[in-house]
Length: 378
Image (cartoon, rainbow, N blue to C red):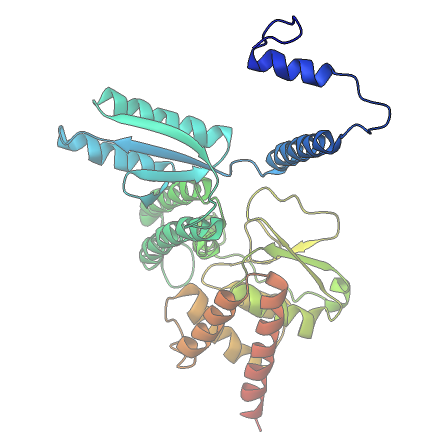
């Protein structure tokens, strides 16, 4: 209703008129509602900024996932896809969901599988992923290690079967050399294929490499075996950095204990990824691929260190046999202590993810084991 000759205003216009009304000099303007509004806006802007910064700081995807649906027919398609996934090293984390570590090469591997699925009338997607709840990264890594360890153990069994065909001593006869060479070459090719998809340094690779290297040495002309290596001078190996791969277990725990107790008391240890590490000057690697001290023939790394440094303590020989039976799993020495010590080492690994902690606990274990076997000599 109009008053004083003024026209009627709509709600929005009325509000505008009130807002523009000049304040009376004797009455202060109430601005608390503006302060509240500004404060809320600043809070929202700050929260939005924090969210953006948090998103920017969030780690990038670590995994590539292939999610597929394969039609029931033709039946061979599922087998074909399964073999392809096994060949590229993918592991199943759920039905029809497969994982690979995140990089350009694994993405390309999955793209080839996807094309096969789609060509066969199925459907598939490739996803970059991070695990937030449920499965952890470590659990997924353990899936990869379990798969590759089984592959390496199987290959080691095949290598031992071929090694059994070699003469116990001397040169390989000419009439058997070509056939054995073909078998060893086939095993080496398979070992190379497995190494390519061993993304996280699974146990067992060193065992295979040692067995194959031993047979390859036997195949060399002139000498049937490599000449015995002279004992190394311990004084030339003092205060060094000794490098091995992360996730230490029995052979690396025992070897580190041996190094610090009998070879290099001031040794420093460094734990690195199984793949891609370039050693710095003066570093010594042990129990890892292409290292200065690792498996040789049937010997585990602990045995190689004992032999190469000329350590003749009978207690160390007993420990070497225990470590061999646990690590190589061939029951060569049939040590009755091996299963129990193996369980203790597995417990240390399960309870401690940190390699320094594993090293400390392992050192205490082998100190006690050494005391037991040292006492038996008196």
